[in-house]
Length: 286
Image (cartoon, rainbow, N blue to C red; front, top):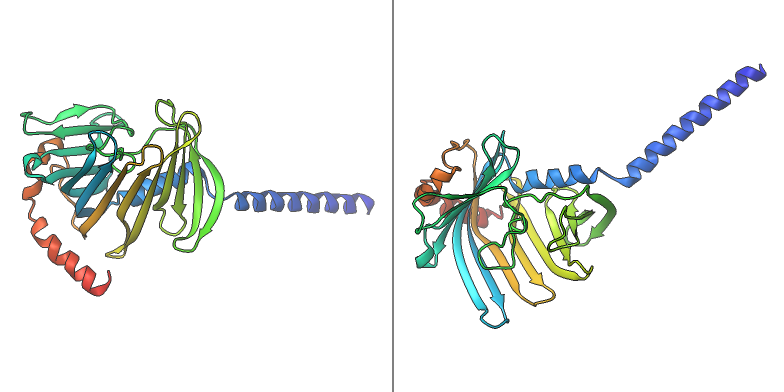
């Protein structure tokens, strides 16, 4: 009898221990790497996203001032990975300048292709560096979701509640090479997996720049509609504003989001429908 009671006590203790471990894991939250992967999938969905964007940059540094660009953007994720094509509309002297970020054929990395009037063919840059400057702004390719950054294993720092965005997960990442930043903090919305804010710290550990994101549902899909950057140290600012956006539910041929497709991107027939679709969204509150 005593032996049986001891066995029962040990079994009960083991069960309670397992429950305690499971509870602790639940309190720790989701895996940080999985959160970042979910964020990238939310930023570049499987459904083709068409948008017109207005980009501004302002610097009070010598030779700075204000600059503006208008562009059209297509994003889509396929079985090989995320693809984003970008083509400038204004200013007039840059019209048609395009860039594409997409998986490199045969390699598990992202590449960047630039298409300019000076070049007869798109120029490839492999691998794509997340910290590469986007146009002449303080944005990098990671900020505007044209690529994902390679980092050391990320760490989940916990959760927070925000009055505007609800529950947020806070993730810390550190670059493999700290040429620019020593660490980054990213706040991810728990319901949409879209980023809400990102902070970059310099090699001395001081806050360098803050990037804020706003989103809303388009065709029922949570979508980033504005990005604001504030360089705390230089006081430079930049913004990315979506002026019209809609989803194309038919799969796009890969040639549309390919290096050769950059030159024909603005001729895509869907652009003629975009303004009407975006106006209908605005009228119905998306």
